[in-house]
Amino acid sequence: MPILVYLEKISDIKRKVFVLLDGDDEGTRVYGQIKDREYRNLNIKKFLISNGREIEDMVFSKEDFTSSVLDIVSDIKSKEVEYRKIMSCVGDDESFIQQSEKFIDINRLDNVNIKFIKHQLSINLDDKSLNDTWILSELRDFFDESE
Image 1 (cartoon, helix red, strand yellow):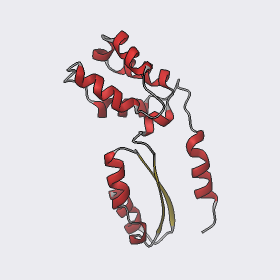
Image 2 (cartoon, one colour):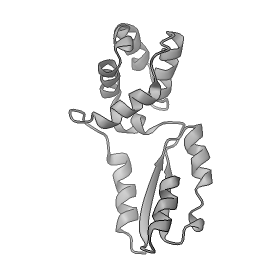
Image 3 (cartoon, one colour):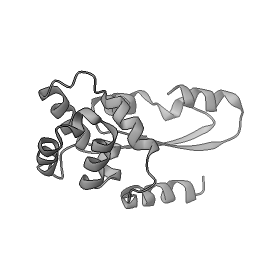
Image 4 (cartoon, one colour):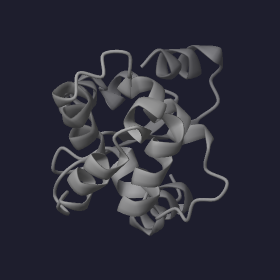
């Protein structure tokens, strides 16, 4: 939200801002806090991912997500068989991140930080086949429409 305040205050230039939020409790909370009518210079579109899912759930295939986490975290890699088994059971309406957090908690991997994993996933995208079709039409519709 600080970036919205910054964009509003920096100049009177009209801008379109697309805000993509995880469908978890925090994303829902932030969604409710962004009052687009409070910004004179911003045309804001908020997009909340449904069903408690997170951006990573929508971008990565289950296999890419699982393999990436194993590459990122040696403590999880040491339990690869168990982790792959858990991840193979994740359904279409479940979150890869939430299941990974449960795995970390159950296995008492206290030094494993889910925020670190999410950050690493977001910066190491080179060899991944990303699923972007779910968001591209939303982005095109919003940024192509005239004001």
